[in-house]
Image (cartoon, rainbow, N blue to C red; front, side, top):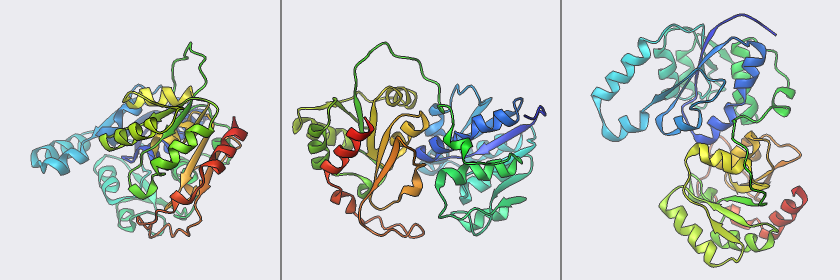
Length: 327
């Protein structure tokens, strides 16, 4: 236990799943440095999931997507100025390893730590760091996220820090006793999505009502199709990120594609099955209640094939058998 007080900035802008998987480090930092002040710099769209987190003193939303969409120089200037005038930090950590995150980190006042050239997703990002960590890119993504931060802060690392974590986000308890399963049917790429036809079959194989989680109009249409072709499927209302965390925290099981909402189950210490096609199990931290099922395709994580639709080869019955074992 260390009683020193320090100011830390974590730069992890996106994506949702990576933010969820990185947030476990908050409790690790506070266990070792209980008086630490933590600021988290995040893409504006994902800020709500971190807002009001008890271990974060301030969430700073960076409107990168808005700047790109609007091509607004004034918004760019305002954002740069706000970063430069921040109160100095004792340590700034780029936990993403992309050029955009490295630039944001370098604009903040204070020393910056990140992945070295061979470890970062975009090697050029390492030019912006004063100190670096060597953590192979093929390493488990959650372990990488944690270790780049613990190394920056001289926190002794062990796998137990991850394996015995408390739930990453706080949620209110629910009075309802309904047993339910969450199905996360969308993802950022079409090839990461388990076919809706298979999801409909899977729903009818599972023992509890299956609640279909969706986030876009196309996903809502897929949810409608699944609900029309299964007697055990229910379409959820569209939820905010905090509502989604709470919902998944109260499900008996979450089954879904390799995407942020599926990873929330692991973060909340709830059972989950993540389905993989063009990506691999390195994207999750397997436990006795959090498992992955991979299609038979071979994946090169340095050159992801977004045309790999092999996820459709995973049989619904196989998923159902694993689900029933977890339940």
